[in-house]
Image 1 (tube, helix red, strand yellow):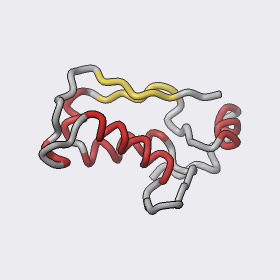
Image 2 (tube, helix red, strand yellow):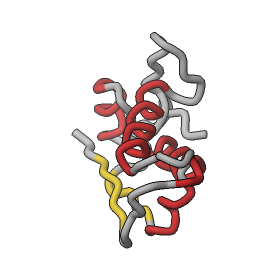
Image 3 (tube, one colour):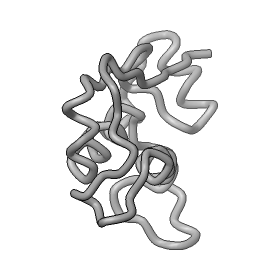
Image 4 (cartoon, one colour):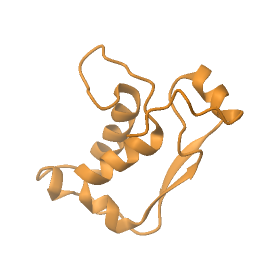
Length: 101
């Protein structure tokens, strides 16, 4: 199974004014998780496991701009998706079912 993690080379600020006066690192982590599962067009019940983890991290860097200054690094398969079946396809190099916008 392909595993993917995001790491930061520098320190993250405790609060991120770009996303609101009380946005925290926990809010940014929640944003990545939600974007990875729900995809680009998020609505209740709209799970779309076709978007890559890399897409979710890049979306977070766009909303929480302070995370970009900490040197975000994605380790693992950048096309990793939520669906276990697609994850198995990625293991053998089949990226046809991944939307990486």
